[in-house]
Amino acid sequence: MVSPIDLQKALKGLDYPASKEQILEHAKGADAEVLDALQKIADREYEGPSGVSAAVFD
Image (cartoon, rainbow, N blue to C red; front, side, top):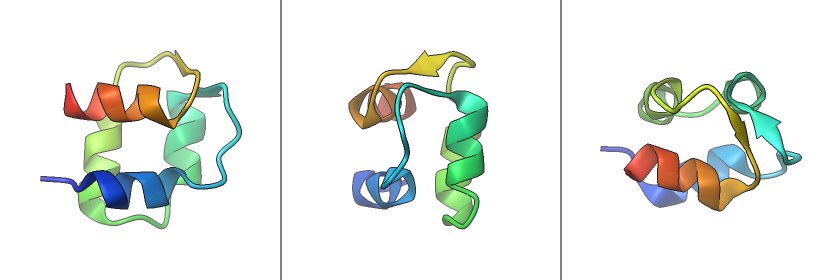
């Protein structure tokens, strides 16, 4: 299970709003667990890190 802290670290510095594609590109260097979780989020635009977290942990 991905940790919320690791997720936030992977998203740090990302400009919002951001698409799923932009989020994945930004998080490229993150742990495999984080990338796997982000692969599963809906393909839409996210307004901020809390929206991404909600999509991952929903």
